[in-house]
Length: 150
Image (tube, rainbow, N blue to C red; front, side):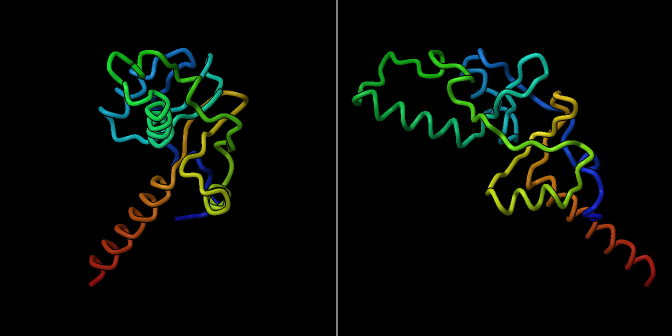
Protein backbone atom coordinates (compact mmCIF):
# COMPACT_ATOMS: atom_id res chain seq x y z
CA UNK A 1 0.00 0.00 0.00
CA UNK A 2 1.27 3.43 -0.84
CA UNK A 3 0.75 5.25 2.45
CA UNK A 4 1.07 8.62 0.73
CA UNK A 5 -1.75 7.83 -1.71
CA UNK A 6 -4.93 9.88 -1.29
CA UNK A 7 -7.78 8.51 0.82
CA UNK A 8 -9.96 8.57 -2.29
CA UNK A 9 -8.14 5.40 -3.39
CA UNK A 10 -9.41 3.32 -0.46
CA UNK A 11 -12.47 5.12 0.95
CA UNK A 12 -16.01 3.84 0.60
CA UNK A 13 -17.89 6.15 -1.75
CA UNK A 14 -21.30 4.50 -1.96
CA UNK A 15 -22.71 5.40 1.42
CA UNK A 16 -25.87 4.52 3.24
CA UNK A 17 -26.88 7.60 5.20
CA UNK A 18 -29.74 8.71 7.40
CA UNK A 19 -31.20 12.11 8.21
CA UNK A 20 -31.33 13.56 11.74
CA UNK A 21 -35.08 13.03 12.04
CA UNK A 22 -35.08 9.40 10.89
CA UNK A 23 -36.39 6.99 13.50
CA UNK A 24 -34.02 4.52 15.11
CA UNK A 25 -36.12 1.72 13.60
CA UNK A 26 -34.63 2.74 10.24
CA UNK A 27 -31.09 2.88 11.64
CA UNK A 28 -31.53 -0.53 13.28
CA UNK A 29 -32.84 -1.95 10.00
CA UNK A 30 -29.71 -0.72 8.21
CA UNK A 31 -27.46 -2.40 10.75
CA UNK A 32 -29.56 -5.58 10.70
CA UNK A 33 -29.53 -5.91 6.90
CA UNK A 34 -26.01 -4.78 5.99
CA UNK A 35 -22.48 -5.44 7.13
CA UNK A 36 -21.71 -1.80 7.84
CA UNK A 37 -20.86 -0.56 11.32
CA UNK A 38 -21.15 3.22 10.86
CA UNK A 39 -23.98 5.27 9.39
CA UNK A 40 -23.35 8.94 8.62
CA UNK A 41 -26.13 11.34 9.55
CA UNK A 42 -26.52 14.04 6.91
CA UNK A 43 -28.62 17.10 6.31
CA UNK A 44 -28.57 18.19 2.67
CA UNK A 45 -25.32 16.23 2.05
CA UNK A 46 -23.70 17.99 5.02
CA UNK A 47 -22.38 15.66 7.70
CA UNK A 48 -23.99 16.39 11.08
CA UNK A 49 -23.16 13.18 12.95
CA UNK A 50 -22.36 9.49 12.87
CA UNK A 51 -24.05 6.48 14.45
CA UNK A 52 -22.12 3.28 15.05
CA UNK A 53 -23.52 -0.11 15.97
CA UNK A 54 -21.96 0.42 19.39
CA UNK A 55 -23.62 3.84 19.79
CA UNK A 56 -26.99 2.21 19.17
CA UNK A 57 -26.26 -0.67 21.56
CA UNK A 58 -25.17 1.72 24.32
CA UNK A 59 -28.30 3.81 23.81
CA UNK A 60 -30.50 0.73 24.16
CA UNK A 61 -28.68 -0.41 27.31
CA UNK A 62 -29.08 3.04 28.87
CA UNK A 63 -32.74 3.29 27.93
CA UNK A 64 -33.48 -0.17 29.34
CA UNK A 65 -31.95 0.83 32.68
CA UNK A 66 -34.29 3.82 32.81
CA UNK A 67 -37.43 1.79 32.08
CA UNK A 68 -37.62 0.33 35.60
CA UNK A 69 -37.82 -3.19 34.22
CA UNK A 70 -41.06 -2.48 32.33
CA UNK A 71 -40.19 -2.45 28.63
CA UNK A 72 -43.68 -3.69 27.63
CA UNK A 73 -45.29 -1.27 25.25
CA UNK A 74 -42.17 0.84 25.14
CA UNK A 75 -41.23 1.14 21.50
CA UNK A 76 -37.73 2.43 21.96
CA UNK A 77 -36.72 2.54 18.31
CA UNK A 78 -39.94 4.26 17.24
CA UNK A 79 -39.69 6.97 19.89
CA UNK A 80 -36.17 8.21 19.22
CA UNK A 81 -34.41 9.65 16.19
CA UNK A 82 -30.92 9.45 14.76
CA UNK A 83 -30.21 12.94 16.04
CA UNK A 84 -30.70 11.79 19.64
CA UNK A 85 -28.13 9.01 19.36
CA UNK A 86 -25.55 10.27 16.88
CA UNK A 87 -22.03 11.29 17.79
CA UNK A 88 -21.22 14.87 16.84
CA UNK A 89 -18.00 16.86 16.75
CA UNK A 90 -16.40 14.30 14.48
CA UNK A 91 -12.90 14.25 13.11
CA UNK A 92 -13.09 14.45 9.34
CA UNK A 93 -10.56 14.30 6.54
CA UNK A 94 -10.60 15.26 2.87
CA UNK A 95 -10.39 12.80 0.00
CA UNK A 96 -7.00 14.27 -0.95
CA UNK A 97 -5.52 13.64 2.50
CA UNK A 98 -3.03 10.79 2.56
CA UNK A 99 -3.74 7.31 3.88
CA UNK A 100 -1.01 7.69 6.51
CA UNK A 101 -2.90 10.66 8.00
CA UNK A 102 -5.97 8.46 8.53
CA UNK A 103 -3.81 5.75 10.09
CA UNK A 104 -2.39 8.30 12.53
CA UNK A 105 -5.92 9.44 13.47
CA UNK A 106 -7.01 5.83 14.00
CA UNK A 107 -3.97 5.15 16.18
CA UNK A 108 -4.27 8.29 18.30
CA UNK A 109 -8.02 8.52 18.79
CA UNK A 110 -9.26 4.93 18.79
CA UNK A 111 -11.74 5.80 16.02
CA UNK A 112 -12.79 3.07 13.62
CA UNK A 113 -14.30 5.34 10.96
CA UNK A 114 -13.50 8.78 9.61
CA UNK A 115 -15.99 10.63 7.41
CA UNK A 116 -14.46 12.17 4.29
CA UNK A 117 -15.72 15.68 3.57
CA UNK A 118 -14.80 17.80 0.56
CA UNK A 119 -16.00 21.39 0.33
CA UNK A 120 -18.42 20.83 3.21
CA UNK A 121 -20.05 17.82 1.56
CA UNK A 122 -19.82 14.17 2.66
CA UNK A 123 -18.13 12.22 -0.14
CA UNK A 124 -17.06 9.02 1.60
CA UNK A 125 -15.92 7.25 4.71
CA UNK A 126 -12.70 5.43 5.52
CA UNK A 127 -12.58 2.73 8.16
CA UNK A 128 -9.91 0.60 9.71
CA UNK A 129 -11.36 -2.25 7.64
CA UNK A 130 -10.70 -0.27 4.43
CA UNK A 131 -7.03 0.01 5.43
CA UNK A 132 -6.85 -3.70 6.26
CA UNK A 133 -8.51 -4.69 2.97
CA UNK A 134 -6.08 -2.53 1.03
CA UNK A 135 -3.10 -4.13 2.78
CA UNK A 136 -4.59 -7.59 2.20
CA UNK A 137 -5.12 -6.90 -1.51
CA UNK A 138 -1.55 -5.68 -1.86
CA UNK A 139 -0.23 -8.78 -0.10
CA UNK A 140 -2.34 -11.05 -2.31
CA UNK A 141 -1.06 -9.29 -5.44
CA UNK A 142 2.54 -9.60 -4.23
CA UNK A 143 2.09 -13.34 -3.61
CA UNK A 144 0.57 -13.82 -7.08
CA UNK A 145 3.45 -11.88 -8.64
CA UNK A 146 6.04 -14.02 -6.86
CA UNK A 147 4.29 -17.24 -7.86
CA UNK A 148 4.19 -16.34 -11.54
CA UNK A 149 7.97 -15.70 -11.51
CA UNK A 150 8.76 -19.16 -10.15
